[in-house]
Length: 98
Image 1 (cartoon, helix red, strand yellow):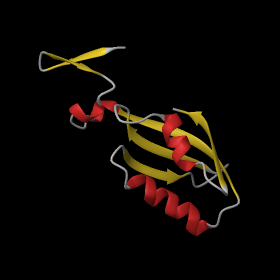
Image 2 (cartoon, rainbow, N blue to C red; image 1 turned 90 degrees about the vertical axis):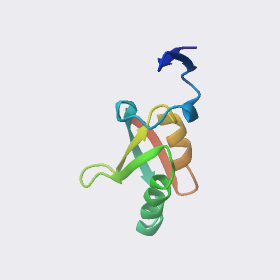
Image 3 (cartoon, helix red, strand yellow; image 1 turned 30 degrees about the horizontal axis):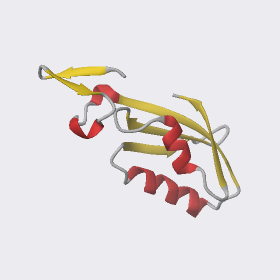
Image 4 (cartoon, rainbow, N blue to C red; image 1 turned 180 degrees about the horizontal axis):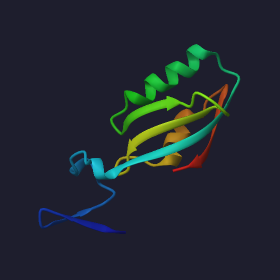
């Protein structure tokens, strides 16, 4: 377990609720999305992700294979948790970068 010192107070790094949002902890997850879902469902997924506290932005690539790029707070979530949010009937995501 790693510990971060914040204002001279040791705080467990897994307790993200004790940290204010910090742009230095902004991370990106890139997920290849295999889908048979309609455009409405895909658009709804992006809207659903952006409403979450730990996600700052999410959008699909405009060319090439269908990829979802998610900007998130690394103290609050991880690529595998984002992948779990995306996976549902008609949508399957594979982490291809972070």
